[in-house]
Image (cartoon, rainbow, N blue to C red; front, side):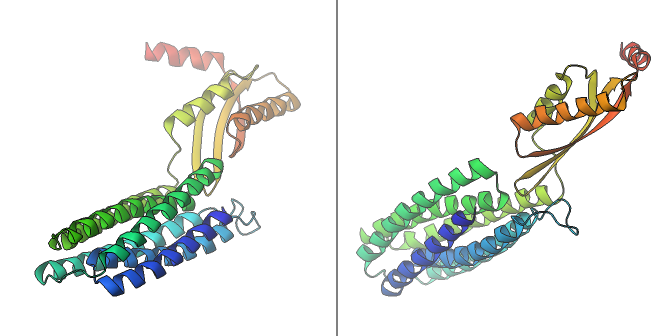
Length: 292
């Protein structure tokens, strides 16, 4: 995760310098959009780096569930940066549409955008690998806006190509479209970060699978009140299992540990807390009769 954040920061700063030179020589509003986005990417990636460093700290006396939600807070910060870039790019594009100007040195701009595409694709492949390994919210948010960058850079490249063939007004139109897409990306990041901060349940299919695993443990008569939430790279799971009332405390504890082990074997990121309830056949018979 730390390597992914360092890589994102390095890519953002490198592309920002290249785009700054190309924009200065060309005056392209699409390149300005790319430059602005890369600068804000750098700021967001720096924030992400700090947040991931904090989120990976182990649990302590003040944070018994760890520091994972720092990643979601970083996601909100990223969304703020990305939303601001969308407003800035959109306003400049509208101004250029109303006051068109010729684009200079399109060949340099095209070369810079080809470099941007190649580097961004390489970064996305690495980030996707990290997300598969860790499930990190912060890296996923970072990857989301770099996927936006991929579309943005492709649009800029197309705008520069069209401008070089005599359609310079399309540069501003593409800039407006890019700004709208960037703003939509910011909204998606806010929704994902808010889901983590509000303790939204994991995917219902995952919860159903955990319930099945618990009930499949020999000796467990049923399970209920399964609750889940996400914090950084950790899943926190709580559930009640129904066990025969005549079991000793030692046997009940052993079965609870088996339930925990069964869930963790398939979902190693889960931290499972199991509560044992005495199974009542009479209560279940009454409930079944009521349903019928």
